Amino acid sequence: MHDVQTVKKPSMFRLAAASLAGTAIEFYDFFVYGTAAALVLGPLFFPTFSPLAGTLAAFATFGVGFVARPLGSVLFGHIGDRRGRRPVLVASLLLTGAATVAVGCVPTYGTIGVAAPVLLLVLRFLQGLGLGGEWGGAVLLTAEHAPAERRGLWASFPQIGPSLGFVLANGVMLVLSATLSDAQFAAWGWRVPFWAAGVLAAAGLWLRSSLVESPQFLEMGDHARVPLAEVVRDHWRLVLLTAGGLAVGYAVFYAVTTWALAYGVERLGVSRTVMLACIMAAVVVKGSLTPLMALLGDRYGRRPLCLVGCAVAALWMFPMIALLSTGEPLLMFLGFLVALIAFITMFAVIAAYLPELYEPRVRCTGAAVGYNLGGVLGGALTPIVATAVAQGEGVPWGVATYLTAIALLSLGCFALLPETRPVPRPAVVATAE
Image 1 (spheres, rainbow, N blue to C red):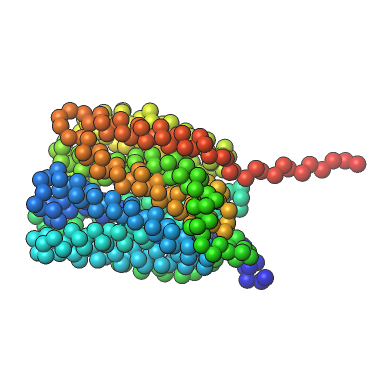
Image 2 (cartoon, rainbow, N blue to C red):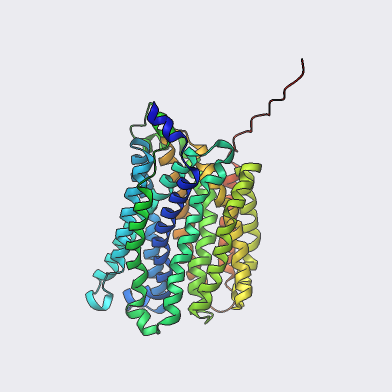
C-alpha cells in the first residue's frame, strides 16, 4: 500500500515534462520523414517515375507509417493495459528511434536498386508501429496522475510534443537547406536529421527512466486478458466515432505541413526555405496555444471545443487554399495559422477526452486505437489525395473540397459523442447555527 501512495503524489510538472520531451522526440522522428518525402525522397528512391509519380510514391511510403500506427496501438496498448503504461514509453521510443536512424543509412535506388524503396517502406512501418504506442502511454501516464479538475491542462503537455518535434525536424532541414547546395542536400544532407534521432532517443530514454507507474493502473485489481477483444466487443462504436472525429485534425495538419510544402516548392516555385519558415512559424504559434485551449477544455468541456475546431476547419479550408495559391509568405502563413488553430482547439483537449471515454481496464488500447485510426483516415491519405487532385492549372479547389468534407464528417462524429469533463464539486458553505 505504501508504494501505491508514493506514486499518487508525483511532481506533475516533472511527469508532464518527461512525457512532453519523449513525445517531441518520437514525433521528430516521424515528421523528419514527412519533410524528406516532400523535398527529396521521390527522385532518390523512385527515379524511374515522373516527378509527380515520384512525389506520390514518396507520400505513399509516408502513409505506411500511419497504417502501422493502429497496429502499434494494439501491440503497445495490450502491454499498457496488461503490464502498465510506463513500459510502453520505453519500448516505443527505442523502436521509433532505431528505425529513424536506419532510414538515414538506407542506400538510394541508384546504389541498390529496388531494395532501396523496399527498405524505406519497412523502416517507415516500424516508425509508425512505435509511434502508435507512444501517444497512448505518454498521455495516459500523465492524465491518470493528474487531478480531475486540471486533467485537460496536464494531459495537454504531451500534445505540445508534436509541435516541438515538428519545429525541431524542420529546423534542422531548414538549416541544411539554407547552407547546402541542392547537390549536397540530395547527396547526404537529408540524412543528417535521421542520424540525429539516435542522440535524441538516448536523451529521451534517460528522461523517462525516472517516471513512475500510473496509480489508476496499480489500483486495478482486474486487468483485461485481451484488451483489443473487449474494445471491439464493447466499444466498437466509440472507436469509430473517435477515429472519425479526429480525422479532420490529421488531415488539416498534414495538408499544411506535408502537402502544402511539396505544392509550394514544386508547383508555385517558392523556395524550400520560405515554405519551411512559413509552416514552422504557424506550428510554433499552434504549440504555444495548446495549454490555453486545454484550460478552456477544463472550464467549458472537451466536446464543445472539438465541435468549434471542426466548424472553424470546415469554414477555413477554401480561404486557406486561396491564400496558399498566392505564393506570398505572409498570406500563406495566415492561411496555415488559422487552420492549425482550428486543429489545436480539438487536439489540445483530446488527450483528456479520449482516456475519459474508456474504462481504465481497456483505456490504453481503446484510446490509442481510436486516435491512430483517425491518423489513417486523415493523415495517411491526405498528402496522396491532395497531390492527385491538385494536378492541372489554377487554384486547387479540389483539395479545399476534400478537406471541408472531412471536417464535416468529423463534426458529425463529435456531435454523437458524450461530454466527459468531471463536474466540479460544489463548494461547502458553512452556515451559522
